[in-house]
Length: 116
Image (cartoon, rainbow, N blue to C red; front, top):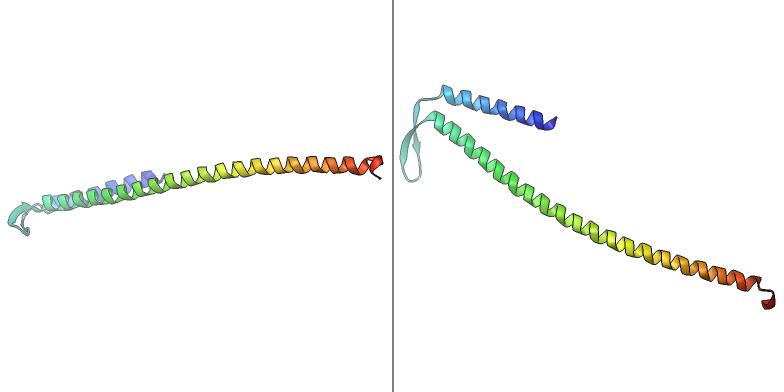
């Protein structure tokens, strides 16, 4: 549902820019650092919107790649910790088995009538 609202908002914003650009079709003077030119205002408005969209997409892509990198790091850390937990669990089971054997030996020795 969130994606649908985002698409709807984007279409509404595009429609507003298109209407604004269509209403302002007269030529305007654009002063570049290295020169000056006259362009229809519709091109200036649409070009500015396009540049803004491209910049936003680039920043989003950089953030997305950073988040994917962090996700991979966290997955690797989780895998390492899971491996360590498995090793510790095996060690615990081994110690528990040794303790059980010692307890059984102690019980046998305690109940042995010849030792009393």
